[in-house]
Length: 219
Image (cartoon, rainbow, N blue to C red; front, side, top):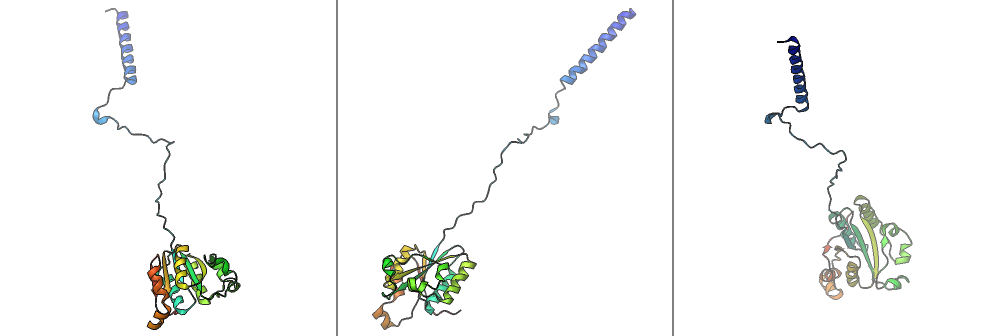
């Protein structure tokens, strides 16, 4: 064979081998099934995440009514209501009824509807007696201050004039009372027949549950 022809064939063979290698690089062999990479979805850096928060049910604020005349039996009813009924955030509505029609002059404005709501901050004031004809009792104030502070309850007072039996039932409607607590005067059978029992009347005619607490207040 001619040496020049031999060199030419060798050069062509090298060029073919070089082209084959480039082709392998550009088109790598198909891997086997067990060697194929598993496709994974890369996270989107712009993806928005929604933070889920636990939604707690909103509890309805209850109104606990207490019929109060500063007697030992009514103070016992107030203490029982605070210890057994009032929960955090409830409203305590003190209902006071005057039977004496001689007090005060302003009562003519509120004889049918009762006085405006008196917040606890005003209930402590001394001029309350002149304006509404009531005298705050220190033991009552102490109990109301305690429930307001410890149970975060709102405290309001509303004063009525007239028959306690009817006015307490009116107050239940006016204040949208969820339940009422009142004391029992402990009248004997004859007095109950002659005078009528306020608690019996309210229990029979009130539009909400009524709890009658017997006994006297013990600090």
